[in-house]
Image (cartoon, rainbow, N blue to C red; front, side, top):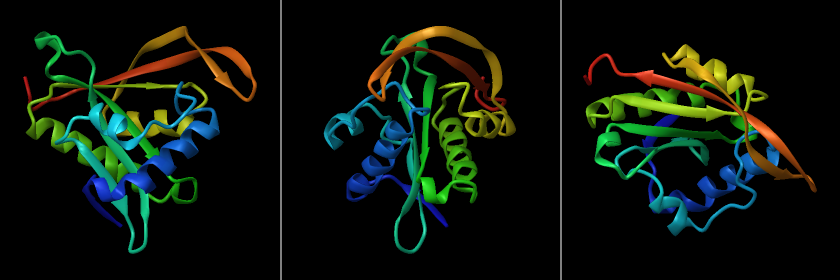
Length: 165
């Protein structure tokens, strides 16, 4: 497995993996996958990676700004998605590690992640790489999935850099 920068030529595979996350019902509030241009515009250009094997993209991870206010310039939100067939093979750990490294090289002091409580594997992964539980945001949003709409909680985790202060 190789971790490389996410490039436009990865778009179809990245969006297909994002769609698989949407379809799982436990990865995002999103209900439809955006076009590549909108997807790409919402991610920080220097903090986007894919995990690849010889033939395909296994997963992707990216950072998004949490605000355009200057005071939050060092804070970003983590997105990480792994192809269902590649889960449990170390791609998530490698991608999140790459994000942490790039964020610190880029001067970001805090990474945050919002994860549905049902996604226990993602919570464990984040905690294993230094994220701490901040709290649970109860009934944060309504999730339209599978023909029904339900309130969903979101576990908020964050990682403060020991390097960027």
